[in-house]
Length: 337
Image (tube, rainbow, N blue to C red; front, side):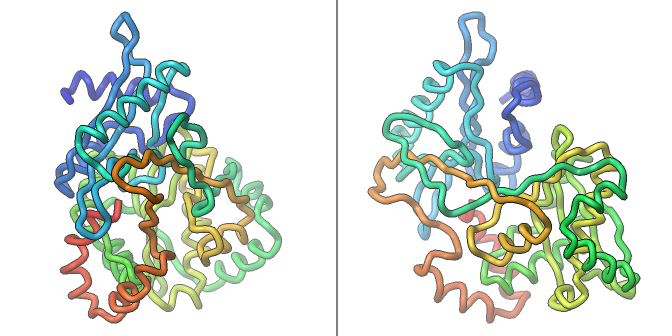
């Protein structure tokens, strides 16, 4: 990519009705500079040379999880964007052809309800959650379920404070601890530093403190009137303090002040604690479908913590001292795309 082609790509993204934050060209830089992965950004053009379809893809090689071509890696979405059916079919053909050329086990397209031909769908694992944000604080509060409003009133009385920041240092300390406690390798600190470098004000962090001590934090993305709380971290005592509830309410109001009208709560695995937590906030689940073109692989991939295959590894990871987990995490997390 050149600066000119990046600008053309992003103009296509910002003008396409189905585009998301995860289609932006800067993800290519994040994948290559932070993780060393090869990015393959595919385009389909009309006869006049203008863009008709795009597809951001990242090639992942892993001894543990295999060799894959994913759109878009380290994101929950980022599948093909096309102006018409013919361009859509053509960009899918490009993806399959590239996958065969690279010798990958499979090609994965995220959050794509419809593909075609030999693509296989899986929509039973994740659900997405999104709801409107009212501009007025009173209206926003009344939109919440009665039970959640009562909970927030109790939380307000605890005197916790919130602040918005761009440095990921405090956030990362909470995030990495939470990931260790969940038995999952944390992404490296330089990943979050790079996010701020390439996305600027379209990425920020909101942190909740109790008695001056940070207890909960969330890193969010912003795109076309949407706020997307994406990575979170908290201390164990945050649950009793219900700091995460205050964090999300404060983020709603911060996003409204920025002009956002949609709160995209992101995806959660069906039937898990985060899935139920989001429902308690009044968000209704939307099934998320991924499409797969199996090439060398014979079965659909299942790279997620609910896979019984990884239960023993998760148990071991939870018992690691935090400095040890943080030292090893960058080696493993680069494959957890």
